[in-house]
Image 1 (cartoon, rainbow, N blue to C red):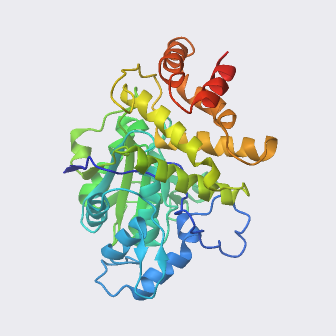
Image 2 (image 1 turned 60 degrees about the horizontal axis):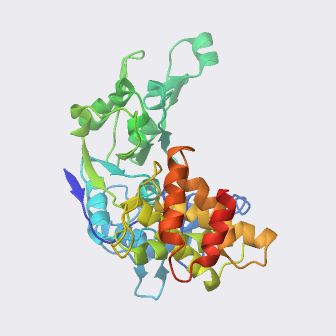
Length: 391
């Protein structure tokens, strides 16, 4: 099953932790106050607790919240007692509803989309809301071994006493199966195909054989798995048809409108700024809108008014990258300026995001500057700043 909703969406980026503007995350537990980026279940513990206290709807086995409350946690809302739940994902409700209900079935969930469409972000918050633990994670890479998904061995124990359960080192997936929790696999298509297929038996039979011991681990109720995959990068490993059938696929699209993307970037930059003690405020909204406009026009291959076609560079120019550019600009403005975000603070970041191929992309960027930015009313300072860093 594949779900794609092509309307206003998106991310508060694939990179972690976000809160709505004006709503700070809950404090981390004792001992974690200095953690740079708390896990979702810690950063938003107060919201999760408030939802659990007022959630009187049916909950699947071992779920911390009902499916309705999980969707409310991701999309935001106001509870009957006045508690405000900040939105973690800005987009169509149906996307979140399908993702949540998938986890309540025996089908695993695959979040698919371009870079910067909140796949990791949604995955983390789904696991935090469903299981109260988002850390049962396998990070997919070209070097991910089978042991990362199945189990490994404590070789000191193995050599001293031979194969035993004490010598076995469970993977995050095995632990999730044993405890009825939600496991996560990031960048599934980066994992070699033969290692990917280790998941087939786990997802279809809900069991993980341990042939060395003549035993198996059977998944208890509440277990499920969320995987993410990037549909843009080249050179990744396609999923086998057998494995793909074990997933319901939900496609996370890029934001449809510029206003929606500006809102997402503003929310995320505000939250990051507060976590890094960077001053945030409405003064930088013009630069945020400029960054979003540039990224969208280059990404779409046409200007916002539809009058001028432009060439698209090799990079993805995602919402996540726009957030990064603005955050870096805010740091520049804070430490080397007057604290107000200006064109010169974001120009270098935009250049770095657009020009990935020094030869082809630089030509595309120069053409865009001269044909579009130079002629746009109110963009003279931005044009000069971009020209200065582009020389």
